[in-house]
Length: 255
Length: 133
Image 1 (tube, chains in turn red, blue):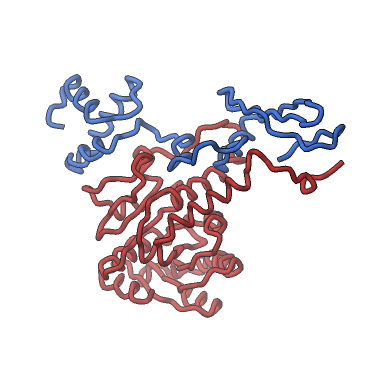
Image 2: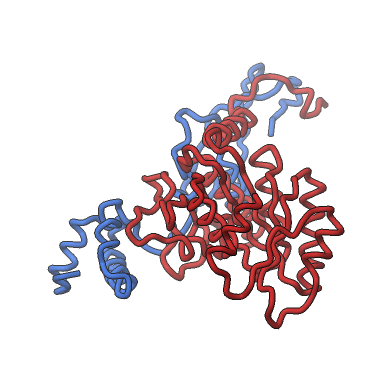
């Protein structure tokens, strides 16, 4: 009996062509984006979204056209950090990104959900883990390929903890994005972030540096310096508990 | 996924797709030589997996709409808001906006309204005595 690759008649479903069309759609939508930077950490609670939002605002104040894609689909916080109450929000019918504080454009799953509602998908409730991850990857693809991003100097992608969304992002983009890593000073954070940075290097992402957040308080450790030495990159900023606009401006100047 | 008519050693061709509405999918394939037809039936889990890829079994006849997957599969937790309705809601002072939004959403949900428009907001204000909101 012949095997799959020996059947060469045209497939009317054209599934591979359809996937190719999706990829082209993403590439076309992002054609006006000069640079894509993923903000990541292997650890939760280190302030990735906070750093992302304030970095985007600082770059925007410096004259850059900035966008933020909130890829934390299950815990979206970017609307709360960038919300401009007068802005028109992104909807199914209106795929323009929302214009937030300092003119930063953003899109987030939070804009599509009722306040307080968790992200849930229609579908069979049993064994939903089988398809839920694929649905989330599809949502990320639509945020990249369906939102009218227009011309941007930098699109920051705020990733959730862990590596899954980063891997999905690499697959959808076709090329690994540059990565800015966020950690807190503790050894526990260092160990978790190390795994994420290793995965990013293995995938071919360029490391833009490390932001050490929540410095100068009760959190003790040298995670930033340790990771910088191990990965031959730099600590581009140490963010204190009460940062000022200058703190963010200095970080923006590093990128 | 491809289908082979073993007897004829021929690749079967896609013939028809059906979505019965119960979360399952049926697609039929026909042997171009002997005419035999087989049906591929997927359970809801398998159907969902195909849906998540954003592909159409049998091929696409029209280009994908923006947010097609989100629109079809994400439970938003409430009725949709038209752009005009969102603009009107944005003019409500922020400290009461959440409460006002919930009142309109509950009003729509109780009446089976799937999209809140300025007209729906006007009706709610009149019916619920919310003048000024």
